[in-house]
Image (cartoon, rainbow, N blue to C red; front, side, top):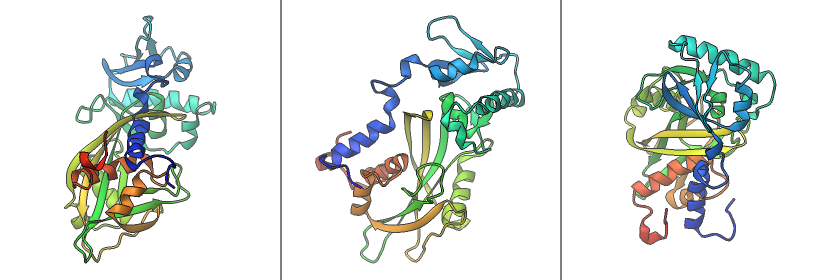
Length: 293
């Protein structure tokens, strides 16, 4: 569904601003406390979460300075010790049913580190990362082909109606978060197989092209995210099929139809940004087209 009364470029700009709204007026940005693990900042803790953490003085140390840091006990020195301590805290907080994000507990761990290529300092439950503003990483694949007319067409998936997040919305052909102790290429191959039944040999030809980063805040918390983006040209005769129940169906759409979908409410927002990046890189959009971001 399109947003009425706005031009395409205005809707595209609104999408980008929405996904990066942590830096907009009205966010909790200036009320958050830095989260420190092993002497390094790895996140931002909003006020509501800070109140809960004061109940664990043996796990977290609190700076007395205004907007000072919250530090995981520096006596916890190993990956395992830190991860275990955090798991214990999160299970106790989860039992109180105060935070909506923890109702979507996945039993899936994400590594915690200042930057992607740093050594992980610990891991924590995926659903809880937004409580600490910990950066999350994912892999997104723009699947495309060249039908008989020679023009590009893009494969889009429709998310299952039973998904915890954004059920029924449009998605990239394959995408997924990078779990703890996993790499980019490993995640790429796995998500291609599970979400679209793409053979390993074909998935291995995906080309790394960009990274889409943003920091989004909503009722679930703070989401600093970086999506590693790949383009994958598939044969004309290939048709993706889902293998893990996370996709409802797939569509092969011409670029003009994809362009309109990007700025509609039918597309999962961060996946729309990945598709928008594809259109810019492949010269389907330019400054003269009225897109000003």
